[in-house]
Image (cartoon, rainbow, N blue to C red; front, top):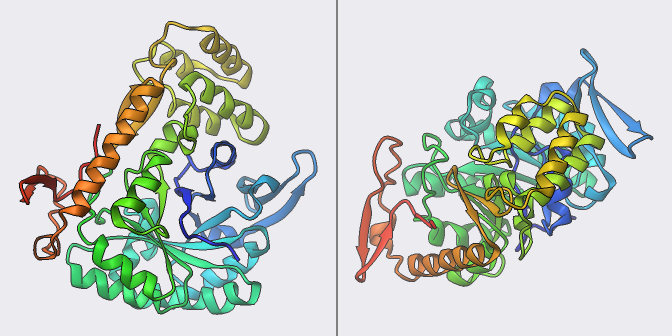
Length: 394
């Protein structure tokens, strides 16, 4: 059975977490990859097809013959499908349909976007814990255990600690194997820094229940895993990377590649396994808007157009954005040399240690200041400034 402990993972990202990004992330050291959320009703309508020309397993939506999900053999033992559901029976039906082709199923209980929360899915499940736990219990008992596959879920924090604690305890009692905590509340935006205040109290509760923990929210590279583990004195906690991997999936490596090199890697996977429109979206996320090539990329209409442009980018030694490492920090783009990137990651480690070394329960378990319109508040702890909304920034 899949082991989530101490793993570095690719987050489930709509449109961005498709097969090309998953494959390139694995190439550079990612341990586990999540698919984008797939809604139960959509998955149920799919037809499983073996694609001999690509060597993949394809799930094709029967109504419009569109590709819903594609799995590659290189993902064996490392692939978690994220499921969108608000109904236990539908979740089980969808889970049983795909369970032999994935290594785990993760229930989306955290995404606050409309496409996820409609019909009570995603973060809407945080407001209906009875439904949430019913779905997880059904998935564990009817899909996971009979097939020796783990069931997990991904949540956001609730503003009050006791509410969050009660929810976490109920979730852990369902029999899941892993709980991923996105350290923002449902109303927070990804441009806001994640809040880590509750983690020192929540993580022992989860791990004492026999459930693994993965932390999500503005993680930026493989060094964050070691930094977080040492700062928390916990070598079993894992991390999940989203937007930093969306911008440069080689951040799973100790030495991320230059932007032009990683664009080439992703393009090679895209033209083999992905649609042109989907590929264009992926690569646009990796080309800085201030690069002279961004507008040219937007005008490409075919893979051939894109290939010509990427060869020009590879040959260009002058474009500063493409000859550096792009990093995304709470939706802000930064460009670094490898030396600058390592210095940035080391500073993040220092700040992590400062935060957890100076963590004080009486302050940190107060209601979270999660108003998306307010500025970050700061607190003084032993003469060290520590963000309540933990800013691990450049």
